[in-house]
Length: 317
Image (cartoon, rainbow, N blue to C red; front, side):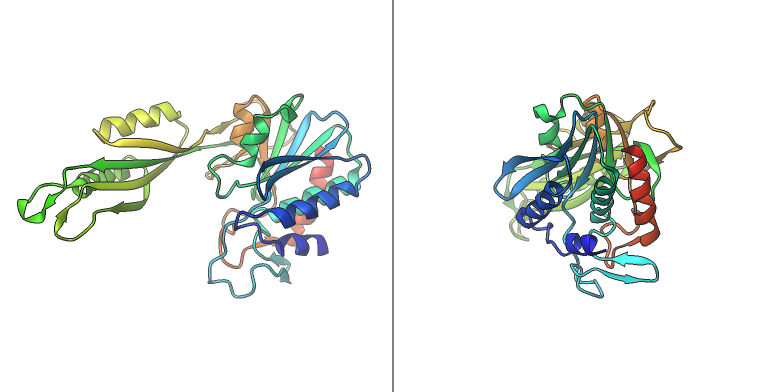
């Protein structure tokens, strides 16, 4: 399990991917018939792509993890094993899946395959996958497997995820005037958004306790099968004269005819699989680990899932 230990030990939650990029490039270059391509996005951010033959299928894993909390019982960047579980930051989401993909392609001698290790899935507005899908590298790709913690189930459906920044504005005044400020307007809007199924996670506004607030900004998100246009219409009709900025547009994944063998499932969390599907690439989501462990302290993946996952990926290849 040294490979997985190495992957977990690399910090990819602070936006600098240099160490991980170098590691993946060396690993891919050691595989026979693998052509390594570097898709530079910005300083310290690069998609790493391995190409075998003339690929029609791409396997995608994101490199980054969320930032660890202080609640970990051990060093999150040090892998350890206990009771058949592999612990460490990203063991589940999704360095365990990077491990499975690398092991599978090392053993299977793939033909006509692409592997894409992408950046900023956890934190970026424009992610590495979006850059990939806008490039010529996507030409000829007909199918995709996006690796996320699905407990080795094949997933062909999930809700979209849309995030917005909203801002209410009012005339500032002395609080003795009893004027209604931007915070009060925003408060009514937040309640309406909550009733409509939105999550409001950040609220900022006001300058002092004795000043009527001039501005209030808040961030709202929703998970739904509806389109971005429909959701914007809902916000506009319920939050009148509110400024709205679309921060993130994650469409739903709806693949009615997955070109893969097996039983298919729906999950509640969003994945970049929907971006591939939206681009006309037949896509399923698959991977070891459970979403219940993703982003949690003392994150783990079942060792047996990693072992079985390698064999399943070899079958896909």
